[in-house]
Length: 263
Image (cartoon, rainbow, N blue to C red):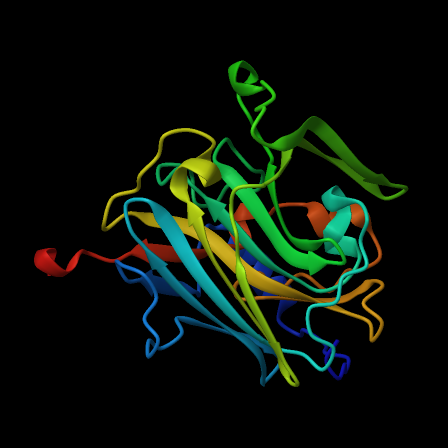
């Protein structure tokens, strides 16, 4: 948890109109290669004017590399027992990305290739969960190498969101460091794992996506705040469908930089 204060987002209507048009105020260029020790972060996560986290990204033919540095007085506490619902039970970091660069930028609903990756640590250790919102029927086969379930419905009296496939990854190992004022969560996510098939994006591709952080209460029991880089309509923390729903038209642009010998 960090020290919370209430923030009124006065420009919500303007942001919604921009999203509907597929416009993005946010763009990050991701360098080719792993993240260097002295690299500058591409993204700063902010609550109002306060920086609550920084995110580094890198990529190569095999994987997308991420490092989150989150500022938090009760770092990386998540009490969850249900791995499909860890976004409700405390601290975590989040990646949302569309892996089809030809998908319409202004899409309000997810299409195949649009995923969310929730990453945290519980009493059982690190947990990484992929939500595949739309999966072609021919691909809905249980992978024996992962714990997975098909067609999960997240509901409340306010509505419901159906996610075609939810997977708990067993073969990706993050590096986690906690300190007094927060934590670092670093991980390399293979493109094949993200896509669920053979996949290798090309330098110069522009994908859409978002990164964020979820903060817990002081005991790590529930999620009390959601902060994202691009999507600012994330104030709801008391309605499961609202918290799991994917809104691609609120994402920023993630440009994959050219390789050194192509510059």
